[in-house]
Length: 496
Ligand code: NAD
Image (cartoon, rainbow, N blue to C red):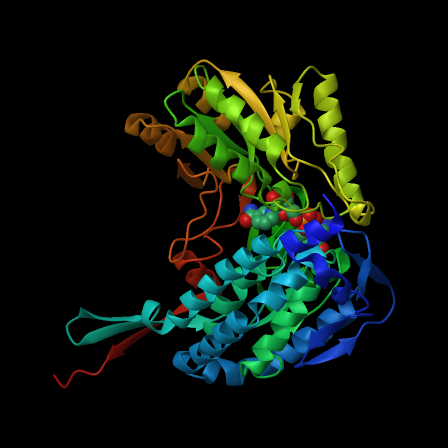
């Protein structure tokens, strides 16, 4: 395939237009603030070209952003929730109008395909829609609790809150938190991933155009130092985090030790159990999409395929489909050279420990123009031992480990034995087998003939075990409770 063909298939001509953005600023108090000190290059995973430089903010930038957010809070809190929701209506319209340009930016900084970038924006827009319904979803309650005495409960915002997000969904994960946190009356600081920080600034500008007052939403760039400054700042009341499990655990502990409300979503190792009665074609298609979508860089990615004896025909179709997948057209790139090297190393170690490399993605065929990019093709390892690292640890790449078992009980024991607990799925025609997995899998999100079982609003997104630290979910009904505190007013207005 020539570069021109790839260009046509994935609309890559836009890549050159994303370069040369220079030094990004922080977004504080409704304007861009130049970074001082160290900057990191933001590299395009497709071809390794530099797109921009991101400043590494720290305590001073967090202090300035908290001051702006704290100053904006009283007036924003005092607006009626319907007025705040109106800003979200306008924001939703702007996201829809700008969706193609935003998707091109996401594709360039993250490496995913244009279609995947657009899909993540559409998922993020669903949360904006949820927030526009908050006047109806969270109106508070009132009841007579004793003769002549009424108790009224209202949901009040917390104040200045923060959201720390990973590289793999530069728009969707920020949009899991921004709409609900702001519409419930909080003001916010977003700390996006330093590996994919550009989209966050585009979101800030769209919120500004939607009429959000200055200081209600701020962006501080950086890495660990910026996050730790947020976690230790006394005026930040709540922190939402999404990223890898070791960092999620550390953020949860540090944030709660500083008296904050913290919800920290971590990594994953999702098991897909395939029964012999599952439709081989439909299952192979769904499993491959779940394993290779966003090049496997999703916390919902299928990572372990637990194949129950008799499901061999599906495994053959899966391998055929994996070989036919077009790298750089159907599947995008890996975020960095270091991540691609790490994934390739994990494949090599599994093979040397005895796993069978049915499809080897370590050297995908690519046109010369993409030679400097970061690539791993679809990879299928068969005969993997349930105790090996590729079957237990998060790889975060397009690598599917097939573990063969004799029974559903054995499959469930493997799923239950893993430390993570984000998602699990079963492919079957049997309602009884599906029910068994829904009841016994140790994961927060379960799929039945669905490889990526993402709950849609109003249902909340969130895993179990080492995939989540804290209470509640990051989206949906549970998120309203995270971003608010109840006020209980007890009133006697009786004339008797
Ligand atoms: P990461 O943990 O490296 O980084 C996440 C965020 O934390 C970034 O903003 C980063 O700057 C910051 N950070 C990094 N090291 C830190 C430290 N020591 N202290 C404080 N902050 C730090 O994650 P990533 O590589 O950007 O994203 C991939 C990970 O995110 C995967 O493990 C994936 O499973 C997970 N993820 C989980 C979900 C979920 O919903 N559970 C969703 C998306 C991604």
